[in-house]
Length: 102
Image 1 (cartoon, rainbow, N blue to C red):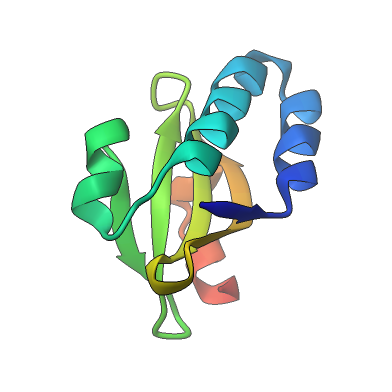
Image 2: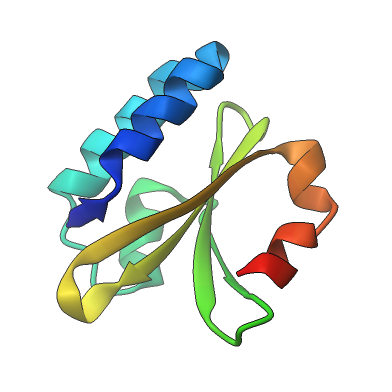
């Protein structure tokens, strides 16, 4: 898959040092992946979820670092592209404000 804004993932890794390893592992896995749907994503990340946001679009949410963080991306399977949208703590994710922004 082609990851749009890998630099953003690396910036999140610098900003959240305890998530550095999991974020870079996710980036490496996403780049190497050939996902065609959520079921294939779940072969690598079993707890990945599809969530409908205010715009009506579906995003994919990855739980990272033992559920401490959420990486939110848009995956365009037909184009083999992953767009990095947000990286949130579990507490910020649970507030659901991010759903209204996407």
